[in-house]
Image (cartoon, rainbow, N blue to C red; front, top):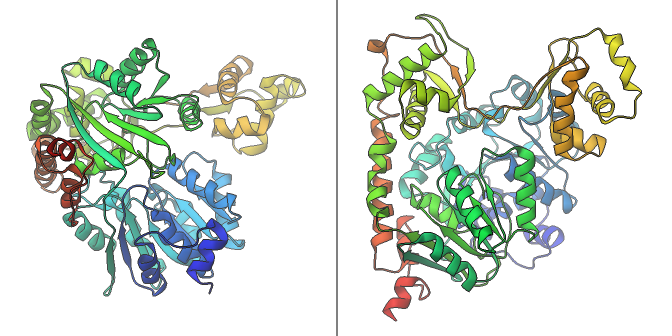
Length: 568
């Protein structure tokens, strides 16, 4: 077994570990289940990558976002470390190939999303892969907690993997977890006796936290961006908001673009890369942007509206100043914003009767009769549904989430499905254009080479993969796929609408039971988080000290936040 410091020096070129990293690594290497809380940009990945490299075998990493997985795998591969990831964006044969590579080859890291755990293919391969696993990692571990800001039910499946690898230590890492969330993480992951918890100071000495009161957020935003040079992220809560702010900033001569979950994967990647490389100075985004983005020179993170929790705010604000140089995390606070924040629990959490009305309307909308519907999936045209059934979007989304938590359905807000392709004509008719030197022929050839089932069940194709294979731009590939309809293909473009899958038959409303955990406990926890948000916005104490205290850490006055500067 190699010494951790030698590994750090060999692969990363660092002479020593950052604060808190060495202790976590020692705990993992000693075989203890470990929870590491480190601030955003604190080097969490090192705490599991180094011990995984120190031992024979492969490290299995559960990670919540494809962008996060891609970024970490890319960075590992740059250092000559064999690594792979699997996601729903990949074709079945690609996933199979990656899993077999990890089982048969000298791969050191395999990244998967929690949703892949329950797939038949992964469960089958886990029987063999488990013999090689040397460490199980849960990244962004706060997602496993029902008390956390980003509760994801599929994270609960991680505990089941421990049955296949009972003697392998687990390390959970996160940048945001309160005392209650920490306890919940340890319980949900079935930490063994002797587990250890490490908390690194959440203090960011170079990051100045500011709450700026204003009657005109756009003017104040332009003023701040003109006063502080460098790359910036501006967060808004709605898609409409990010588009409006980006347009107004561009009209004011500031290089800006918007980013939200409604964009195509191609456009998301393009705008993200333009911002990372400095071609775009300001990215105006919803919370769909940021996780896994490693850009050290962000000088400003500005919130035009505050998130629903201190956890979310700390994650987003912490993306500024990762290079250690002075940076600013600014909240723009309008005259009505405090009142709006206080109203969020009542606006976000509908009544039980409201939830039942949503369930009934949903069943009627999709024409599901009593006793039927189990396993059926539908795409929900939200504007049409809201208009026809007279619901508002915020409470509709909350109702669907609560119905999901109560086991009646599965709600996917952004399913991001891939384009679907099938050839319905006789096979010989395709030969007429396969020999052409046209873009359509090139795409058809690559589909035939990379996917099975084009002439029977049809296939879901990956635009980025086809772009890589043909040398075309992803946007061109998407257009050519649409054109294939003219030469005998059946084509369905990628869907952006939310997807609803009924997990059981339709039940009468008098038998519809909303569980306490999905409603009352969730509402109470949300109210508590909102109270802390209001307290942060109104406090006169040091903001760094407030944040440290919220996460159960010892804090001290930072001397650079707006409150500290005002007192000086």
